[in-house]
Length: 173
Ligand code: HEC
Ligand code: HEC
Image 1 (cartoon, helix red, strand yellow):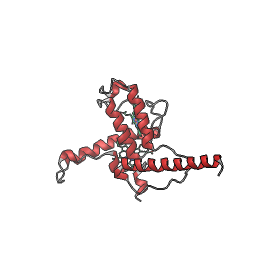
Image 2 (cartoon, protein in one colour):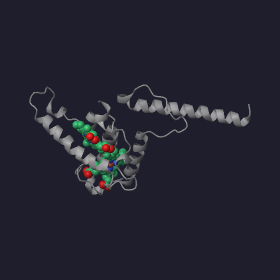
Image 3 (cartoon, rainbow, N blue to C red):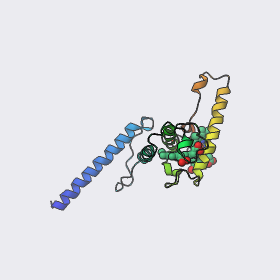
Image 4 (tube, rainbow, N blue to C red):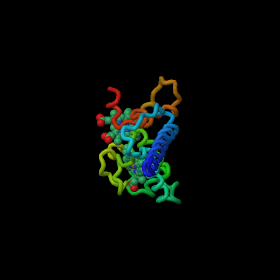
């Protein structure tokens, strides 16, 4: 076997191993959605998962706001209308593990990459409206008199409906 062929083969083996590892690790990190890992359709591109992309964005923002994590989001960021009073670091958690994971998207589904304060993208504006509906539902749940669940345990989240999908209506019809 020629030297170049050997190198190529070794590279392939390393690549496939790395790919399997990533699949296993990401499956292990998300036990709630852990299904049998599906073989990737395109073996030639090893794209980062949404979760990896989102963690990277959060890390960038965390570094940018270092020292001000506990301050209210509206003092640290430019365009906060709904999540006022929420500590800045918690806003980033809501964005990552709440909003993004619920819809199964990366940050840029809602945000303009160069300007997260911008409301230009429709899904970001939808998200604010969804947050209003979300609160209404939780308030109604609290008022109900015949549920067995304790009042404080009745709250739903974005995931209750979305379950990893952008449009929850599209999946179950
Ligand atoms: C489903 C849509 C959606 C996704 C996905 C999303 N965001 Fe947001 N983001 C919003 C909304 C809506 C606001 C404004 C909240 C408000 O008005 O209180 C916001 C505000 C922000 C802000 C404040 C920007 C400013 O200066 O005003 C940051 C920073 C941010 N998001 C980071 C992220 C990061 C990081 C991710 C990915 C991990 C992410 N977002 C994913 C909808 C989203
Ligand atoms: C009661 C169920 C329910 C809850 C709770 C809910 N959603 Fe939704 N959401 C929907 C439905 C249904 C749609 C699709 C509506 C349509 O297009 O007809 C949707 C659509 C969206 C969209 C539009 C996506 C796109 O790209 O067009 C965004 C963004 C969104 N939801 C964000 C959120 C966020 C963020 C939360 C939590 C604060 C949330 N939703 C909570 C039911 C829900």
